[in-house]
Length: 354
Image (cartoon, rainbow, N blue to C red; front, side, top):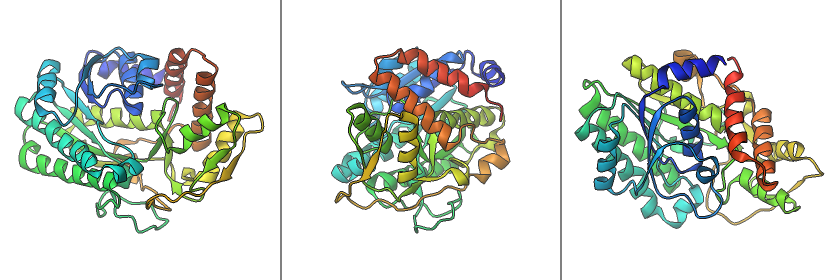
């Protein structure tokens, strides 16, 4: 496996701190790092008491349960981990929830970033640092053209705006403290991530899987909303590539969009159609409008920078991404071996040559 050999050579034995490791993306990331031989410490809130990917796939990490807003606890965990590489993903990640509790969203997403960067600044040791934000950091004019990394940061809702603030905090720390310190820092703006193990409420794919598992018709609230959907493995392998490249060559550090090819951006109806086809058994969906707060109608990313500078490209197109996601959820509802399936999907992904 070409990808596996490359990962193992660099990541084997590396000390990595992952914040938000008990979440959906964090669990996939930690499982991948485990398979690559990394020595991982995770810092995050406890996983939900219900179904959650972290308990399902059981990644081999040193797990520290703590709140990213608690600087003292985070600093203690950081000093004990002595990380060479830091991947910051701890966040309140839901748009609709940010309307319900904007204060908590800003405290977590903004001050959590400050706390993490303060650990890097005061305790030292890290060579490569990633702050994972979102495609929603940009001021969205509802245009069809993708947004580039040099465009205005001004997310609309509290979640998106807090992530825009997190980007500004990171830029300030780079300019004020890290530029000539030997610490390479990048911000990664990834699109809408799908994949097995996401059990969040008010997200399209978990809603699809939950409805079909009960023999119900899927209800879609925004079928015409267009998003840069991408499988979680394409996203986290981009994170790992940036972390490795800037570890070895600091000039690679910067802001990067991470998303699908332009022709793979999909509407809600297209995603639901793909999911129903992959699920089989006469699965179907219907439009069910709800009176929710503002959500953007169109969002695309211009990912030419990461392709040009790092040579990164997505490996799974949208149809394959949905098929693999549906396979995971069908196995979940059939009480299959999800730990093995998760590892197998990582291995299958790494076999694909770019």
